Structures are given as C-alpha cells and as structure tokens.
Length: 236
Image 1: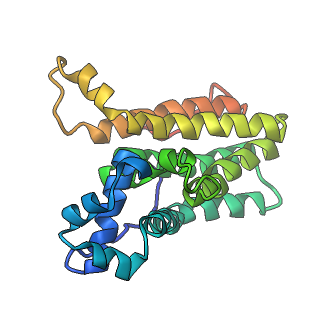
Image 2 (image 1 turned 90 degrees about the vertical axis):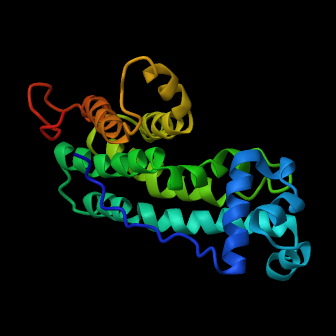
C-alpha cells in the first residue's frame, strides 16, 4: 500500500483558449523539446492561429518558460504533503530512524505515483528538456522544485539519523528518486519485457506496489534499521 496523500491536480480546461494552448505546448515540448517544437505545431495542435500565441504568451520562448513555471508550481502542490511530513519530522526534536524512514517513504510514494501516472509523467519529462535547452539554460524551475521538495528533504532525513554525511545522503537520495522517475520515463521497456508473459495491459497498480517494496527495502538499509523487524506494510 502506498502512503501518498498527494492532492489530485485539476486538468487544464480545453474549452479555454489560453489553457488549451498551454496544454498542447506542454505536451509537445515534453515530447520533442524546445528546438524541435515549432509555433506552427503548437497552433495546429491547439487549433489556433499564430496571433493567439502572441496575444497570450508573447513568443515561443516566453511560452516555453511559462510551461516550465506552470508545471513547477503544480508539481510543488502535488509534492507538498510529503514535503511537509518530512519537515515536521526533522523539526520534531526527537526524530527516530523509524520515523525518518516513514517520512521518507511518503516522498518515495509520491514519486512512484508521479512516475506511473501518464498525466504527471508527461509533465515531468520536461525536466530533461529544461536541463538541455540552450535558450533557457539557466532557468530550470521544475528541477529546482524537485530538489527542494523531494531530494533535499530525503537527504536531510538520512543525514539526521545515520552516520552518513550530507554529501553521502544526497547521493542516496538522488539514486532513489532518480531511479523511480527514470523507471517511469522508460515504461515502454517494461511493456516489451512483459509482452510475452500474459500480463494484463493495465499493470500499473502492482508495479507501483513492487517499486514501493524495493524502495522500502533499500531505504531500510540506508537508515540502518533492524533487519529482523518489519518496517513496511504487509503488502511487501
């Protein structure tokens, strides 16, 4: 069972011209990147003319940055419950390894759901493009948000109750978070692997559960918990 209490994110209104343009631009930028996505492609996808892009966003560059900031703000709200749980644990003054582990698993579960839900994952694919776009090379709000809301608090939890330095903790956090997101980004490889195994097409729920158990076992080791005790839910 996943712990996440992340709020549902309302989808953009396709009947609203600005939101329709934004929705189509996010989908195209996340698929093809900034350079390979033209204004004409966005216009065709959203069924508007070029003047509409100029009216609402000014330019392609401004639209791209608007998309990044929009996704960063939405993702910030999505990850906030898990982040706040980590903050409360760190500020409690009497944090135990078990409590740090439980708070960490809420961050992990939020990542698992995001990486396995197409609506979230298509937006998170912009992380790659924002880090490799020459037009906005110094503007990466999604990456900054994920570091502050996911990777940094997980590292702080590890550092707080183990003998690992912050540098070691951040590497552990990067490995866990990065592995989960990368797994979701390359889901087609999973589909190929399961193609001959008579697995139902809709296999997201049990994959989420298995990833949760693997991450739980890894973090139990990182937090140096008693290996003879059960620290995960009974689904593992």
